[in-house]
Length: 221
Image 1 (cartoon, rainbow, N blue to C red):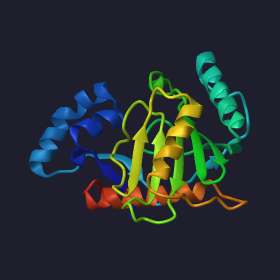
Image 2 (image 1 turned 120 degrees about the vertical axis):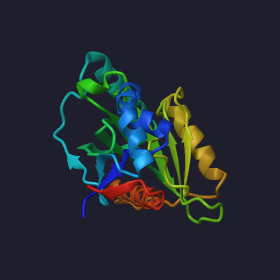
Image 3 (image 1 turned 90 degrees about the vertical axis):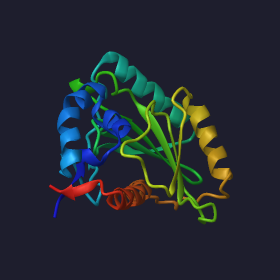
Image 4 (image 1 turned 45 degrees about the vertical axis):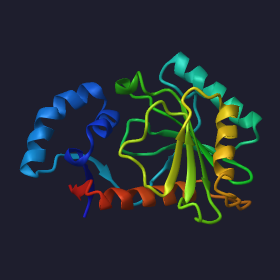
């Protein structure tokens, strides 16, 4: 059965981060009533599996400024040795659905994410996210996720993911911060030679869906 996010079960902060402050204000009256009545307010659909769709290469970006930012960030990642794995459309909970994927040895998968929809003019700037899965879970965490996003993810991610945000960091700084975060837990899992960038992110998605289900955030659509 398809499942959707229950907006009434989110915290007020998560709701604002997910839909934006203006839309959150418009939804507040209905959500307040729904909470009192124990009723769900259905939001975006949540699938168990990620479904990235490979896109043909083109000049990316909805505006010249966004295009320059994407190109510059891509060049920074290549300069650090990141290997591009393609550009994808990745449906998700937010408007940020364009993803350019990379692997970065020995243990990192990296995504450059942005949105080209008119509604995301203020939030569609490219954001780098770096992911490493840990060799063991002695620290209580399964993986480390470091992000250049200005806002925390919504809904909150699984408690098994060690999440760090460095919104003002350059790409080299973000990678350096990520390496330091991983070292505190021990060692990361090395990527195989033919690493599939989707597998680590699918595993993160699975952790998150399980966490959201435990919180009661998911309802049948």
